[in-house]
Amino acid sequence: MTVQTGVFAAYFVVVFAIGWISLRRTASDEDYWIAGGDLGWFVGGATLAATHTSAGTFVGTIGVMYTAGWSFGWVLLSIPLAYWFVAAVLAPRFTRVRQLTLPAFIEARYYSKRVRGLAAAIVLVATVVYIQAQIVAGGLVANIVFGLPVQQGMVLFTLVLLAYTVVGGMVAVVYTDAFQLVVMCLGAALALPLTVRQVDGWGRLFELVESAQPTVFAWGTLPATLLFTMGLAFFLGSVATPEKLIRLYAMKDMPTIRRGVFFAVVVVTCLNLTVFLMALGAIVLFPNLPTGDLAMPMVATAVLPPALGAMMLAAITAAMMSTVDSLLIVAGSALSVDLYQNLVDPDASPRRRAWVDRTGIVVVGLVPLVLLLSGVGEGELVQFIVLLFTALMAASFALPVVGGVLWRRATREGAASAMVGGVLSTFAWEVFGSEAIDPVLPGIIVSAVLFVGVSLATPPPPAAAVAPYFERDPKPDGSRG
Amino acid sequence: MNGPGFIFWGLFAACGLILVGYALWMWWTER
Image (cartoon, rainbow over all chains, first blue to last red; front, side, top):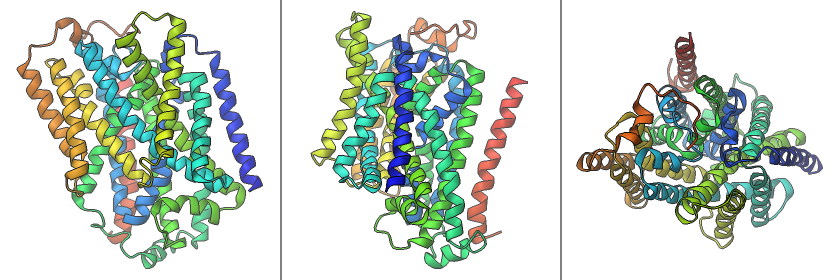
């Protein structure tokens, strides 16, 4: 326990130090929300990879793998394909006008403050649910590391996160993300060989896995329709979630984005494959866990030597914190910039804006914590909450964002109805629909039909709104919206 | 290759191919 506490103390000290150093670099709104918009490929790619990799990967994915077997792993293929699509098709158009938030892009492209407010409201609600899932996982880790009751663990986890995110904004987030990515890679890279050795080496791994759980390498443990539609959800989720899109605005230019996204995708793919292999180890070593979510914490505490186990738990924590801090930024900016400043108080002084920015982040961090402590939304398998969030975001924003930069005729009415229709149909499917199909499929179909149908039925968009995204000539001049 | 071998190593190979594709595209775009 002392080694664990030591590793965690050192880890928190570094994170806090980065947060406080960042404070000096947050002079403007732009610094606070997109880290000044001049990140290089390494930090830009690292923050993208760290944001992508969450408790969903280190606790959830290994959990699903443990329960449902290797066929789930194939869903991973959609992630590199999605990021390639982002770098090749979406980013060159999406970043022509640099914005501070995704809803700000929606306002610029769809010439409407109200549609922006709608986008911000969707971001806000969906993100709070996602933050909740990650706080639950944070509480579980704190329970294992410090022996705290889960509820106190959740409080500790949230306060640590808020401390550096509120102070340093996006600057603190991207640099702590880079550090946390290093912790994740180290943890995973050190833990894998030890886990495999415990299982009796690579040679007998397959054999042992199959005798412990014969269905691991069989197709059909998850329905094929579910695998394909989950793949679609991961694809669209990598393309159209605000915490990823905003990182395109944070990077300097297109060559930087191409390299940064490549770097991120290599790291994300390798981390996932490492985690998959550790799931195999967990199946052999702990064949009878009550829930798959316990597989990784069990490996960390019962298989690895104490210092390494602590390192692995720090890696899990790093995965969660680096995702939740990015979501705090997204939700905080939706509340402060897109809702408050955009609709309520457009003439606020810079000083007042700075206060509103920070208050927004505190609010979106405390609301999910309070909900959890009062018993709302506990006890779900982390990976399925991650999937629901991804499905909601993808179904509401994929069409307005991707369609908006590829199809000139898209109108604000089309975008608004695509967002609302996408959210409602995704949610309805989650509640009433078949479990063999990920809710993103009905969501995206409804969203697409509304996007095209309503756009064609309403007057075309004004030329001034679409020009920046479609005219070849005006080179991106770094002008900020 | 069949059974565990295919479903297991096939995934690694497929991921590798996509990443190589991305790298080649990046080289081709910036050449």
